[in-house]
Amino acid sequence: MNADPALPCLLLLEDDPVSAAFLATALEALPARVDVAASLVEAELLRDAGHALWLFDANLPDGTGGALLARWRMQGLATPALAHTADPRPEERDALIAAGFANVLRKPLGVGQLQETVRRVLGAETSEAPALDAKRDDTTATAPPIWDDAAALHALNGNASIVAAMRDLFLGELPAVRMRTADAFTHADADAVRAELHKLQASCGFVGATRMLAAVMALREAPLSRNAFVQFEDAVEGTQRTALA
Image (cartoon, rainbow, N blue to C red; front, side):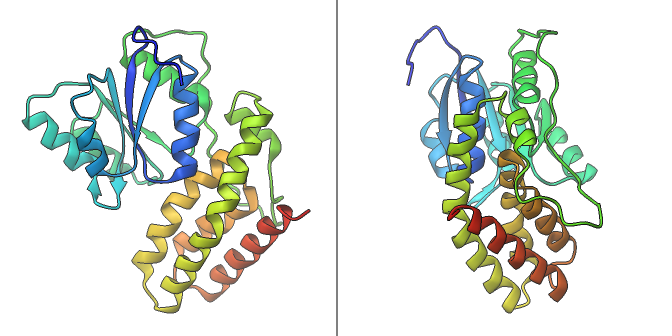
């Protein structure tokens, strides 16, 4: 990794490996140096590294990005901060803005949207970077394709090798997510189902896993629905089979 001290150093707080890899790759292309933390505990260890910008996931396994920002503000740290979340609710965005974040990015998002927002917050706004939004709300009655290559390439500025690497990482994480989701569904734990799908929704968008994304969104809306769960399982099976093709 380029350790050029002239480059701005950013702190990325994200616990999902696929999302972290996508976001870090996009940020390094600014160019910038990126420190990645997967928890509040790891972020605390990097607190005094002199970052030019913080990018915090709204919800982490050991707390929230908003609580971390509030704590660091009380300690006198004034570094600008952006929040990112897969939660579409306006009240979630309003709460994050009220907590002190300069802006809230909804995952999944495109490279251009992320980079443009970061440049603007860092004071280097440019009109040349298009605002690309990779979120897709497929509501058609027919089953969407397993992969949307065009969407994935669009989100990653046409870099096919990065798309392939991201998909390998996504497919490697999918079995464990499936197992935890199935366990939560079996125990009728709607909150746990939604928690697992929250991160998976962003990952699906980043890699263009269109059928998985539609199934995830349907199950998040009705986390104890047998039909929605069966559709989710079918989407996982179909997606995993592509890794064997």
